[in-house]
Length: 262
Image (cartoon, rainbow, N blue to C red; front, side):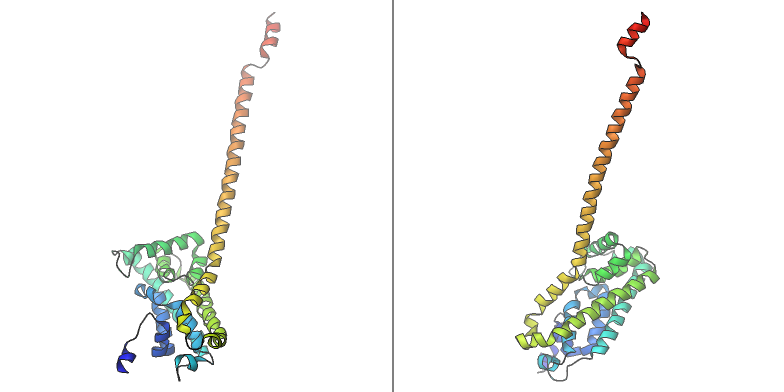
């Protein structure tokens, strides 16, 4: 029994909830959004299972006495996610790119920073801060990247709050509202199905990004078409001007010129 209690898998959201409860959820939300080493925590699946753990069927799934407070999760969760992200932004503003000046390792890869910076530049500061909440790894690295790139702390805070509430409370409520249906369908084997469910949540979450890419691509193609038309128009104008200049050099043509000479 002792070995079973000690053998905690920090990447298993069910183990985390069963062992640490609501405080564990708060700590992980803070670490995942505020500390670079926290990117590997299972934030989305943890929130979904925390919502299930706050439902009336929580004890049947996780064991007696493990039901969590929905109010505590929905208030404390966003607060911890906001605080973590603000810490990440402050660290980025304070230390700059020195934060990322380290070689690739099993935990850290420079491509994580590049991806976060790409989203920041692609969608603009406000939209990037909100959308990044729903993208694993990016939600960890975008906060210090925003600080490095000079996003004002007040502006970051506003969109940080919006993103944290949408992400944390949104996924919590999905888990809470679906808990009864899930239990009726699969019993206490929810951990066998958590990955597909969370994958679906992430896909739905990143749909706005997908549509933004499509819109940007169409706008780029439209801009290229306009540029081609403009170039053709400009070329036509140059040709017309050249013809006009040639006409000025021979204003009366050869026939009239001969009559005049006669």
